[in-house]
Picture 1: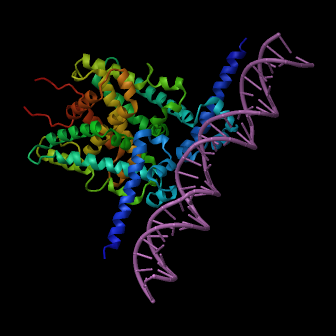
Picture 2: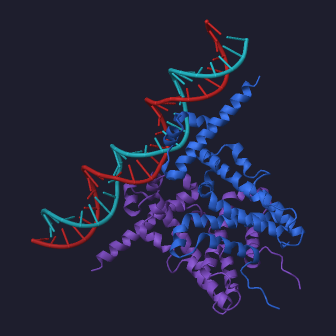
Length: 212
Length: 212
DNA sequence: TATAAAAACTGACTATAAGTCATATTTTAA
DNA sequence: TTAAAATATGACTTATAGTCAGTTTTTATA
């Protein structure tokens, strides 16, 4: 008796249809300029129905963030090579991040513009996923740990903290680009060049290496 | 005939009174939970009057951000020592940043929670100040430049880009703390320890230095 | 196949808060 | 003394997120 299963699938599909509709509008018109009524019309459903599937507008936005994080997570994990040293893997992950930024700019913006202060308006279940075992942050931590063990990454700082620092620093630069890209243009600084330079700083730091 | 000047002063004072009122409420109840009517009542003025002095709610929030940036700017500049090397000055500036984070947490949050996507709702004049000559970012740039000239800072990356990278990276970590402090608590990571470790990463990078 | 219960959906309605504007009050200049 | 200018007011307009009583569709049961 597969009726329950079929209904489950249908529910899932409808949920996705709503996310698709929201995504089309958000990506086209920007998060500010899309109302729940717009989304309802685009999804060919009534507004009330949206609230059967999503707790709030933020929850719907967050569903798009989750799609983005899944893509990013996949890109990061698929370049992992257990035969390489930790540092090299981290470098590869940096490349994946850049690729995500270039190839999925809309998802990138969805993640950047999600207002974490409104996390409480997101379904509890979804909230947990971001820190779950398959999150990019956890994977970061594991690879850094390996790097410390194989001697390619400095062991002074606990891997957990290093992972957070890296993640937050990279997010900071991406956010800067997302919000102030116009300013960078005026200064004649190319986005990708800036990101590559950031990776250099991450690896080797600001300090001039002593010659001897 | 000092009437114009007096009126100017009075206007300035009223403007400040409004910012004071908004600040008291924002700092006490959080940005989400304060309405323009609340602020009008706290300032003992009508709501209409607020709009004579501020273009929008965001503009008022931004006025508080400006106060915070001025404090930060002062803290950063007052530790500058022209006799020290660039790298050392950058380190001192890092300490100032930490001090700002500890001593002015409300202003810190005001800056973090200002939504840069809403920059267009801010008075044009105010918008420019943040990139003016006396902004922390410009000062950063100058000190990094000096560090590159005195050989203490790696010359590979143009100072302007280095300044943006540093600024954005540091903001990223502070934002992480502001938004996900709860998560750090759960992981048993102390905020200040995390910031100090970030400074290490900024200076020396992730990579293990080769012994020889 | 008829029917009652459950599930899914609807859209008019409510609540809230930002921003406006015609009017009133206060200050200045002559 | 008074008219013009500057400042202040708060009821009103507008916008939109979220709700809920009622309707339609689907499923289970006799």
